[in-house]
Image (cartoon, rainbow over all chains, first blue to last red; front, side, top):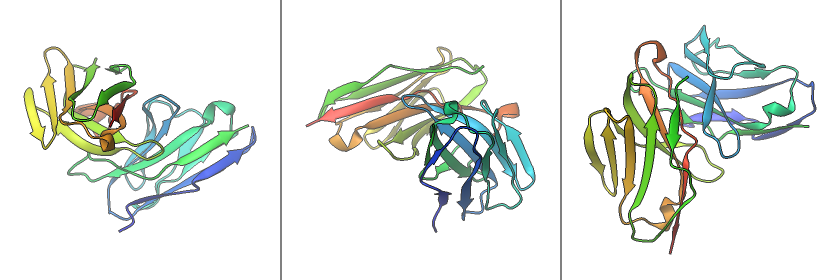
Length: 113
Length: 113
């Protein structure tokens, strides 16, 4: 049971480039989330999904897109990267029965220069 | 906008002391409260939750909740150097915010030997 996995672990992007952060969970969780964490700050919700085919915006969705075609995968797409998107990105998942118990992936450290 | 305020750190206590971490929240609809621990460079993990007024004890950890004052705290008794981490407070409300946690900035705790 790998839990929540994220790739890549680190990435440097140039301004204007695009990329997809991958997230996969093997716990059959319905709920999945994308957060960003800036230095010294809490976690800000970008997007979340309550099941395959259903996604919704969180607090800071601008500049990002998501899709959820399967229960396991929840990729996050960055279009036209900007320096303000430099952050650590965490993917998380939780079951319908214990929504609050979110299991986090190891994170992706992204730098946009 | 749901606000979550935590006592500004860093908090430094000697080994064996009691560490007190505080959190206030703005959303009166919040029903449950979660404490996540995040070691430096790692992802958050759930350590405690509380949903009733009063105290809840789990080993060396005690969560305290006062909904009238919109205040929740986490006490760590007999603090150990291994408790050194950032502690994130996360209220949770049902209804329209089902499945969404709102995280505070966190309080960084250092326990010195």
